Image (cartoon, rainbow, N blue to C red; front, side, top):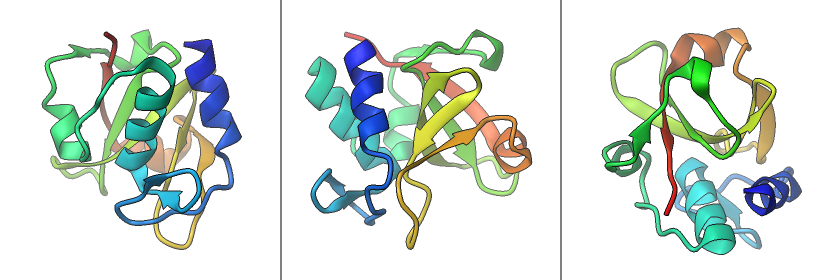
Length: 125
């Protein structure tokens, strides 16, 4: 798990790119997790955020998050999950936010992310 988190931190500043799954050309939110889990632990994740949420991996309550868990968000409190990031620990997660931005680390306590947090999954072999 240490390698996964270290590799994720090295991607800070990589451009957002819709449909992107490459450190060279950029990532969208789910593409970032697909890339990291494949590269560092050999786990193939579904390509989209919606598909990831329906995987039969362990659901994790927010108070039990561990580094390496996938954190999912809705948009403006809606029911539909539309964004995913990777939990780093200490209330922080890394993600590819949106067009015009770069991969960055944010706090789950930020009012936007706190309000829109939906669930988390623990993806393991």
